[in-house]
Image (spheres, one colour):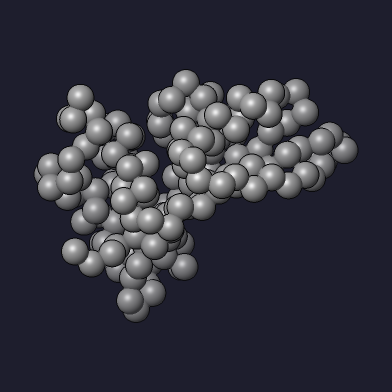
Length: 153
């Protein structure tokens, strides 16, 4: 099968009031054992912020992240793909950081998130094509053409 997803980049921040180990665990729920890069910056009021980031480049690992999301959240992503896809063929998903710490991958509209960016392999690189390809990925998952983690239990 042709590769449809090129990479997944996950990023979250740790405020000075948060436990860095817990924030890292939330990110690990998304990226598993992939290397995590850390950088330090400061907020608007001079408060210390640590940025944690990781990238997956293996499509099976990327699919594994999607498979751990609920059917409801995947359906939500599917119906909002046009809004989530940029001109660089990247699909943006915001996962609840607190729930990720508890090993759940759930969408969030809030600010305390693990921001996920999935690069879709679309040639030519057009957002409409990337949306169509991603819709196919989600459709294949819904149709059971790829085993879902919650169905394997």
